[in-house]
Image 1 (tube, rainbow, N blue to C red):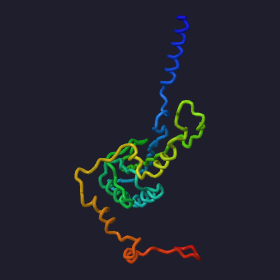
Image 2 (cartoon, rainbow, N blue to C red):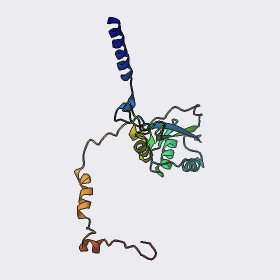
Image 3 (cartoon, rainbow, N blue to C red):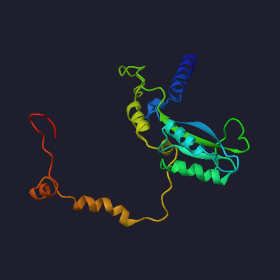
Image 4 (tube, rainbow, N blue to C red):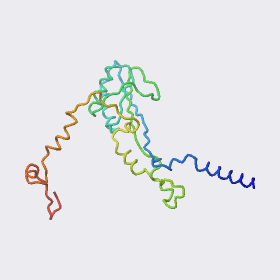
Length: 215
């Protein structure tokens, strides 16, 4: 009898151990989360006298256009030429971007008489989505669906303007401007109501032509 109780106790212990294995899909948090990756693009520009050679600024501008440079991209200049750095900053300013301090490590050395422009581009995506590898029923272990979280997190990864914001937040300003914060509220209060006659007179609504369907 004692041996049977020992076997039952051993079996129960093994069963509890199996159920306590780390199972991330047993909670309400999704196991499918956005992952931010970084790709560095390199452009070497000639700067023989510390400033960009003739035509290099135009060539750099064409390279920026080819990359589709925009918000979320980070620009760095590797090279100890302040004049050339300022010229690169002028070209970057046409795209609404600033040159960031320091520069990431890239393959190869920057040759004397040249500067290296590095564009770091971040991308956010949710790997493994969609995932329909399991069925919803039966669900004996009360786990979340294999595709749980893919929809909302994939949308978040595609819509975020700057993927770095998914990694860490931004520091707020040390001073708060109450006037700026109240602008949206004041605009909402002062905006004419389109559901009443005076509001329609100030901001008439467009009507739909029944024959053409155009507004």
